[in-house]
Length: 208
Image (tube, rainbow, N blue to C red; front, side):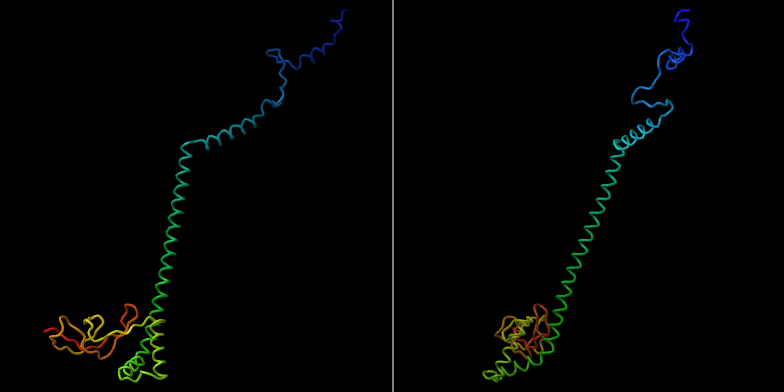
């Protein structure tokens, strides 16, 4: 028998095991490809990646996200502005309240000392404060009140009458004046800055 006749038929089956029965060519997997032709998990992963990239690269979605972020930024800026204004208003009110409280305290001190100041003024007018220790004390008291509290004494003969700071207790005609003028001071007035603590009581000379 020849060699071809003596070949085992099973060897032919083994040689043809890797051939495609439709094409006769081998169907073994190439490097990098899945061995199982039904395994498509890698395709699903690629598809998910593509969809994710499509969402990020979608101009409409990007514009919508930018608009949302812009609205949130605008609201945050508005909240910050309102908070800043509230803080500034609080600081201004606090300073104003402190200033008003200080002025009220000063006014109360001066009002309590007005009788003493009136006695000092009367003694000075009578010539009792020309010299001596009492004169020194009186001068220091008046200087301290003026420098520390801003108290100002007003009301003098010859001043133009001002109903905002003067209280007329009497009026008399006079040919020596052209406008209503203080002719005599009955009691001096006091003020702190523009706040009148007590109007000056005066006799007014009216022009004829």
